[in-house]
Length: 188
Image 1 (cartoon, rainbow, N blue to C red):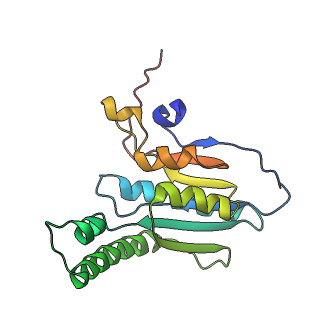
Image 2 (cartoon, helix red, strand yellow):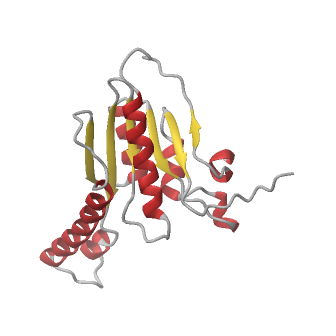
């Protein structure tokens, strides 16, 4: 985790594959709907790495995954002070889904994803639990994902989603930092 938090370049944590003779199974987990500057470049880098790894390995497959959620859906449904109706909640969730779908489709647009070995997945789910479950269920060999690095107290973590997901996956991981990341480590 120390390397993941502080390394300024993409970091490949390699885990030997138990079935090395079978085709490589890749997962690129992206979050193109982020508001942090540079996240569009982070998403693009993740997609470039995922698609290039798939092209390099004969028979490799690539799943591209974006998990989304409507942050206030449960609050609206269960908070006695809010009084949101079912139709209002449905419209809110639909609006969030539409925004995420547009960001996802926009992130994928520059890439040729017509190969039969590439599958895009747009899931309403919590990525911290969905990604590790997906990795296990689909026997993913390598996960490519971004690690949002911070400074100060928040810098002790690499980002809530990445930190939670990476501790629960049992595969190789390519961790990518956002553009402009500055390592807190000084050469010496």
